[in-house]
Length: 79
Image (cartoon, rainbow, N blue to C red; front, side):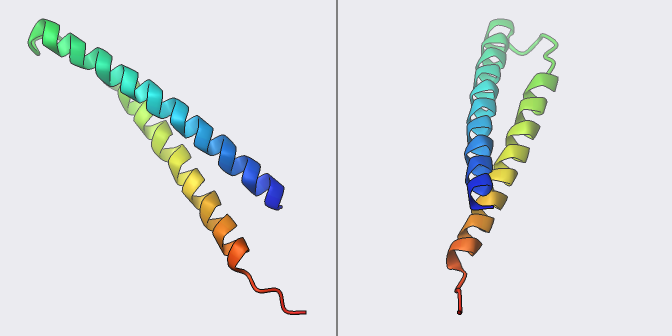
């Protein structure tokens, strides 16, 4: 269980970083578009909200798995 927990934590963390980078790039692109058009152009933020939602979901999974790992670390084994 511990190895699956650690691999899941690492995978969720890496995916979270990837979505954070995509979100940052999309925000830069939208910022450039706003500067070029002075805000008078239609801007579709659907992709940005999708990246944000996926980033939040994977960060929640990362925090959940880290909490499980911490609780597993804090367990006392009485034999």
